Length: 188
Image (cartoon, rainbow, N blue to C red; front, side, top):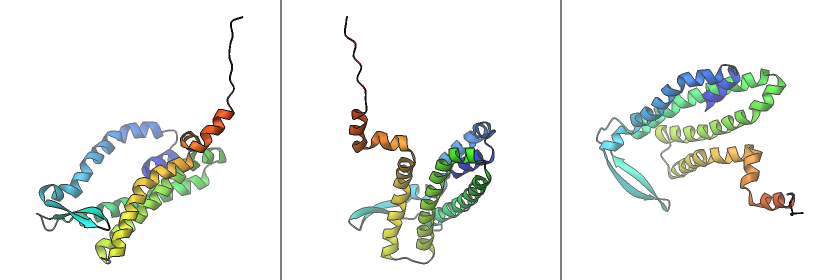
């Protein structure tokens, strides 16, 4: 998403054509990359464990050097670097855009930046968990960070898009009905 926003801001004219060309590669990466981090789970014994009133899954590794947290950390650090670079370029380019284009891109960039911040929260908790802090409070915060990342994007889109927000909010439904005009035609 941050790459999409960055290319839209950098090359608005060639944006559609460039995304048509790289879309097959992106689709292939979306299918292939998750396998790189989870292949050891597929061949290992997975079992449930109770955690904080809920349920977590753990596993006994068949390939001992291939920890899921190691692969997650590699993916997260790579994506983190990519996110920081793309978001920085997008923000810089937004600052130098003419005012008429800024209005069109502002909400999309705000959404992208907000999702990047929630991703940074996930990355920070994951890196802390893997490198130094194996504690109960970090384990709980990591669940909250992943939940924020998962649900946060939908909340951000609803908060940014006024038309979507008014269409789904129940307190605006009664206001919309009172503003409607009824026209009837009677045979004459």
